Amino acid sequence: MKSKYKSKEKRKRLQGCKGSLTVEAACLMPLVGLLLVSTVLLLFYFHDKNIIASCAYETAVIGSTKAREKEGVDASLLNQAFQQRIQGKCIFFPGARADIQVEDETITVSAYASRRYFSLRVVQRAAVTEPEDHIRRIRRITG
Image (cartoon, rainbow, N blue to C red; front, side):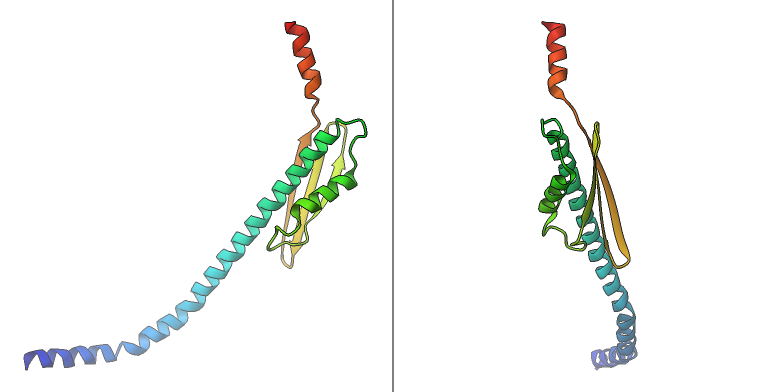
């Protein structure tokens, strides 16, 4: 008999808690959903930023390598190289563009993308080096 009394008391106590748990969950779930969506959006942003930065750097290095050749380098060819590298890789910023400046000593690639309220800009530079001249100078000194 005693155990039956405890179970009735326990049931009465739990009956008062049923609605409060539902209300608390209803208030908490939008916050959890907002946090989840914000985290995914932030991950997409940084993913695309890294992809755009790496494609811009690769394009700058290609430009610095081609600048040593006899024909030199053209900004339109580097722009095509950038578009080939970035095509289909971005999730949040699919329409990234690049502004490429070719100078005597450096190649500068400024890549930018925007979507609604978000935008990003990445600038990558590569120096035009001539390692052959450096090697020849070293050989003159040592040999």
